[in-house]
Image (spheres, rainbow, N blue to C red):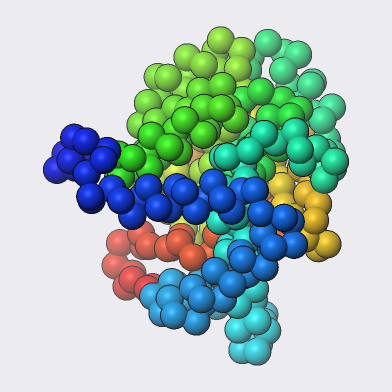
Length: 304
């Protein structure tokens, strides 16, 4: 929801920190690659060292999702997660502020034939994205191969919302408010691919509970609903920074068969399983800093 108390003028002193942040993002996008990585790691280290609340959330998530890890291994994954997400800030800046063409030589794209086959049906496509630290850069790199619209949550800060929306509109065909279901359905029915990330907790009313890493998680019902309303193939997309920290892999998996099934819990469970398998490839690059298990089944205590 947009803050109705925000100043009308974007030159208001309240927005000066946001202008500074935007300026730093534009600067960061043009740093040499090795310096970009170093700055990102430094940001991640500072967040890990001093961000007590986010560190607690991350530790809780990883304890729940990776019970097989011992305390030392889990602590290492927590720190690696912060470092990867720090780099992700510079990756986001790069995706928003630069032409992705300059990174084409760093991209390996697999499974393109699956998307070509899906689009050939003429029903559009629903792309299942995942909240990796590379999310926005992944969207920019994806645009080198396939056009797509994106579903997003508007930012509360009016200036940053304008900056973010303009950047994403340059990468994607349209940036669609996540509350605009009709807009999503209309674009898909017109034959477009729409990028949608269903791996966050949007509360009890929008969700069913389905296992995610073996933990009951509030999982949005909208994925199955959109697929049912449009008849579009549902296309899982995996993307991550490779271990060399200098290249990226994007991969389409085959369209989900017999989806939706008509059973909301079964559909949510299936989507979560696809996302979980993708995360296990590069677990430190996932956004473990958000409260994925915030909403609990009735009667269960909070986890954070």
